[in-house]
Length: 207
Ligand SMILES: C[S@@+](CC[C@H](N)C(=O)[O-])C[C@H]1O[C@@H](n2cnc3c(N)ncnc32)[C@H](O)[C@@H]1O
Image (cartoon, rainbow, N blue to C red):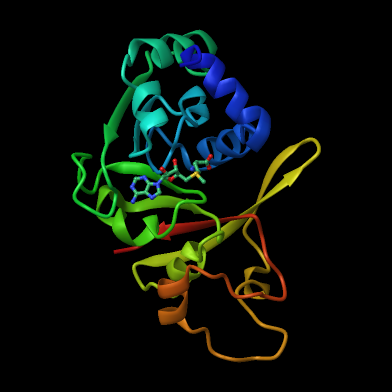
């Protein structure tokens, strides 16, 4: 297997690190802890969030986190906060019960990995923030879930990320008004084609 941190660098070369997104969210919402189900080896959030709980079931991800001191050393050398970094990893299916703390994390991250807003809601604290994209329809599920309030989108610009909290009523709308088939999304993980889409959506857990 490749050197642990090399695997992370190779991965973010392809997907982008998203550091500016996590920086912006952390700043704006004073995030100190986060849960990242379906993280693969994407440890970028740890560079700005002191306490992170990662989860995946992929064998390369399991190996990456096997010797936790390796990702931890990298994070401690590159982090942007003063306290020591805390990293935990659980090799498990996030549709089953995780060992993560209940009603605890400031941020829940759902990127490209199905319905984390639903399966992992219990671990996010009330008033905590969900960062989610709609690659599998998870942002749409959060939008129609009364436990979440839609509070913003993240725009990625050349000079960094920006959180937009106004004019949100343009999102999750079709050109011609029609209802969304939530059951179809759950079944097919296929995203409806909205008139205006964002790459990243933000919700607050309100219940
Ligand atoms: C496309 S990758 C995205 C990785 C990361 N979220 C990112 O944005 O770079 C999806 C990841 O989700 C993981 N995954 C999918 N379903 C899962 C499940 N039920 N439990 C745990 N991990 C899961 C996969 O193993 C894979 O590593």
